Image 1 (cartoon, rainbow, N blue to C red):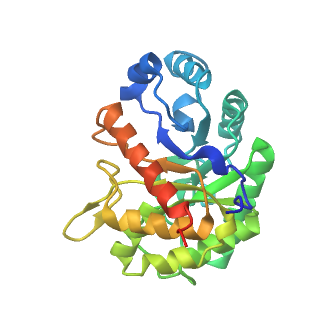
Image 2: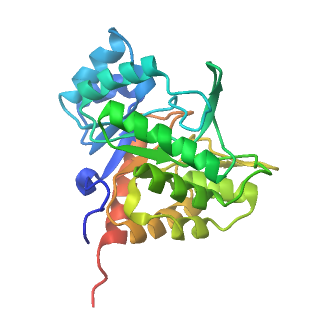
Image 3: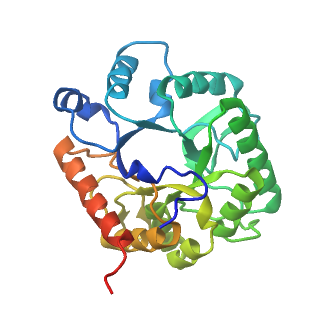
Length: 283
């Protein structure tokens, strides 16, 4: 199968999020992991334990940065101080690409520290794409934007979420971090077919995939990242792989974090699952 036309990092396989409870185990045992994803903001510091751990990880593993605070959809201008610190980290990790969320979360310099959905309009798409281009040019690294899970919709929206995502990435000429769990969660909350989403995005722009667990409650399905991937998400992951080909995939587990061995087992399960989907059927 040909390499992904956008990123070409098809050999990256399955990554695991680097989390504090696992630091000691990883540094002591050096488990076989394709790569680690770090939350950029956790390491945008001048020194101390976080950077000591990061440098030790970088000696053994490939690292990819994932951010939670650029807020491409906010009306505010890009925070230049944030970008300067982020660029120093990019240079330290040599991350082959950088991801952040397609969302807003700040107003007049005040930060919500949440990933809020945007109204899906052409004007917002143009504004967001302009900020993505500016960030990419400053950071000098490819950017992938991630679709977020959502629990509310705007009456002002002019298009579906997948149409909005497609518009933004085409205008920005950037990649997609396709979170299939987020698609499933939003589809349950807003009553759309998640496969319509998967079928109608520019597949050649998918540079990374996220898979994770979610929780279903009486009124909403929530993106909780606190247990293994569930069957509907595995099905969507299989469908996505058939469309986009071999693509770096990150297993997210961010709450009620179990032992490293349990998370590692789930990543190895994802690896085997991915290989089965991408192996041509015998004739």
